[in-house]
Image (spheres, rainbow, N blue to C red):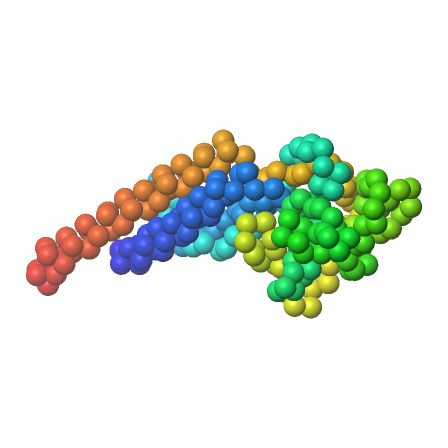
Length: 245
């Protein structure tokens, strides 16, 4: 019984963490290039008896939060008319050189800096496939599906779109920036295309995000109910059964 109490407490804690994740996803539905996080769980109990009721199944299946994983589903690309806005269709990230090192993003809100470089909204250099800042001479800019940048008809660079080896853990830095572990080497993407004059929206829509948030709230309430049941049984044992021993 006491083990059930602690399992329910662990389950409630896991659901509260998952509730925070769902709230963050919902808050970023308008953030360009945002990658929603999806939680995964491990069982608190093993054994067939724990699946005999909805409450027991919830405790067992949602007892321990294993962590969060980035969803790599495609967000909707929306045209902006800005020739330096870029959207990735497929897998991969743009590379940005920041004051804190190299970061990766799906947000292609770029512009030409006063120094003539392709930069992010924050003025950080966007990197080419070779890992170098991208110069943009004056003139009409055309960017192909393969990321090749042409200015006034001449190719100047190829914007980098990178993926990572399987199992690489991306760490969120803000809303739509990510870093990888030291030593992880980005790989040029081979199954993506670049769309000029468009931005990719978040891969979390408002309706699904709201439904996820409601579901997390209900599961948290279920865990609270489990705690109440175990707590009541614990008090009964302490006040009625122990005195008889």
